Length: 153
Ligand SMILES: CC(C)(COP(=O)(O)OP(=O)(O)OC[C@H]1O[C@@H](n2cnc3c(N)ncnc32)[C@H](O)[C@@H]1OP(=O)(O)O)[C@@H](O)C(=O)NCCC(=O)NCCS
Image (cartoon, rainbow, N blue to C red; front, side):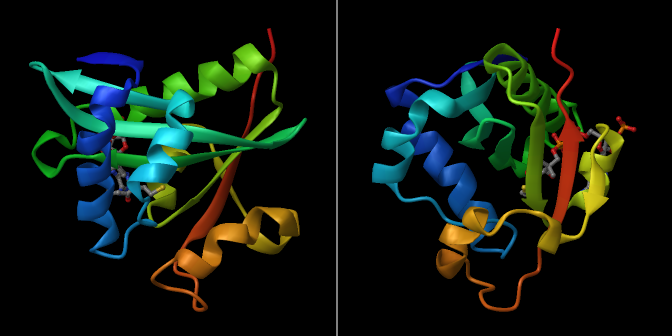
């Protein structure tokens, strides 16, 4: 398993991974132009030369970032890839010294295993909700909020 920063060549694969899970209502679809524009925040997992997982971060403020776009191909789930991608994002937030990393997720139990705790969505600042209108579940949100404090070395 190789976790590495994404390149433009990975964008079609990232798009495919996210699209598969978005069509099942698990996450928000991300168009190609958005993926290119935010590519520097993406990590991918390569397995036997194939991109089989992705995750990214979005920094909102000095003390708050979101872990988003987390997807692992069905055939590769349960091998530690999701956890490794989250760890790469976490370390990236350590590097830029953002103190809190949250996620809005349909899989809160997965994040709890990684040290995140559930919080009431209302506790998060309103400015994070900008893209909710693009969510297939809007306005009935099926995601839960989880957050982890980032240990700053
Ligand atoms: C959620 C997802 C990213 C997990 O990826 P994965 O590579 O299968 O996860 P890992 O193998 O790294 O699992 C790490 C741990 O979490 C557990 N886990 C995995 N998915 C879980 C889930 N949905 N709920 C609870 N625990 C889960 C694993 O059993 C493992 O536990 P262990 O360390 O005790 O063995 C993957 O199932 C996925 O892509 N789902 C569809 C998209 C999605 O829901 N994205 C999240 C939206 S933010």
